[in-house]
Length: 70
Image 1 (cartoon, rainbow, N blue to C red):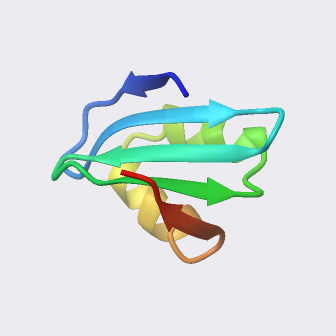
Image 2: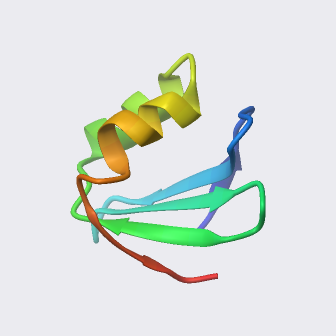
Image 3: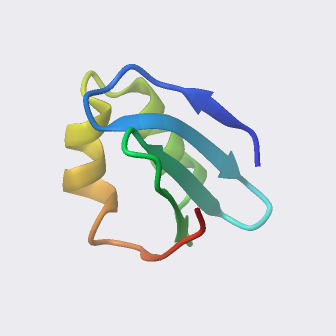
């Protein structure tokens, strides 16, 4: 999955697969997680948020099933 770099104190890059509805987030410390069932609107909101980390913690972290992939 292709990820786009973001400016954040916590996140390094974000990608999205609209066919499978999978949001992929790479953190600054190097781990990569995929969040399943996230709609495109969540990806768009994350990418346009003034604070990517705050949006992640408030709206993604505990709301979607996930697994570490890297």
